[in-house]
Image (cartoon, rainbow, N blue to C red; front, side, top):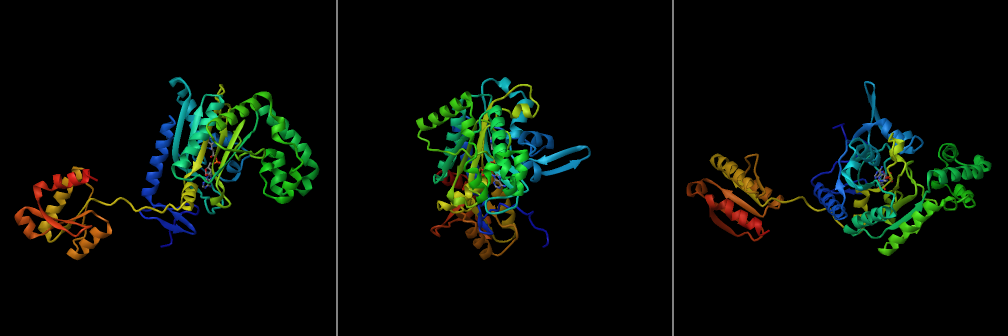
Length: 432
Ligand code: HAM
């Protein structure tokens, strides 16, 4: 077949498989991981929000920022009629849009929301980097308080701890307020101007559009130049500095270790004050498990008259699975049925169809042959599906109104009256 999945995407199948050198975990692992993430976040008192996957392109352009890589070159954007849409590259801007659109502030108090779902960025695919990937994250909207920043970090770490992913480094920084960044940007520009000739094309361009991003460079010569550059922490005003000190002190209170990284600037434009990134050495080049920070100016950037100070983080499911693999976690098989019917002959197949309906109605997971295959083939199928019991029905069984229940693990077999089968299996099912 010449039709294949779109580059940078992948199918999640009932079984795990290798795509390149990456294990794509089976659907049951995803469902389980999502449930556990929900569990952790509900423990932290977050409520779920689900926003559309398509958004107006304007939201992302203004929210994430015109000069970011995401908006400049990674958006899956399309036009229909006069409207331009984008497959969301992240969820923070959408959550803020939803908050403003539905006046969620009127529910009272701080809104603590979490989400899980796909995001899209047209990046060059590589290990841990996809064009459709899946994020989980939190957004705490409507508070300036440093405790919200520290709580976000604690929730983020709790998720990775839930999966035994503790070989991580938490890096934090403060990007200051808009004013601090303006002064820093000017200082950085003035400092770098004389080196413009030596900078890469991309850094020279960033020098004009978004000088902070030059600090992200992996280029050795540029890193050398930057060694004597002005430092962001020296430009922090009193309030952002006090805010940052308080965040750090709260983290220390609850035993969370971190590294301060004055060069951590993050790739989205909406950040102010706290910036966070969680890294794992197990990820290779795409070392970020999760990232986030405070975005006090986002609401106004997307048209709110009111400031909505907020903080959040997002992590990638794919990278969580890579990190889990490194701790030795293996893909797990999908759920096995309790019972699998083996029917011999047409009258038995008809009876079994009805018996299966009864069992399913009684919440017993049940499978049956759908191809009219031989006894042997049906037994093989019961085995392959790891059914706890094979339930054998032929002419004799129909005549006696009793089926043969074979316990697959032991091979033991016993007759059970048809009208007692539901209770028989439901009892066993309840015992686990
Ligand atoms: P981000 O750093 O762009 O931040 O993405 C967060 C996480 O999503 C990354 O750390 C990574 O695990 C995952 N991720 C991003 N791009 C890809 C990709 N192409 N393939 C696989 N995984 C990827 C945000 O998106 C912000 N909205 C986070 C945030 C929430 N800030 C405040 N609140």
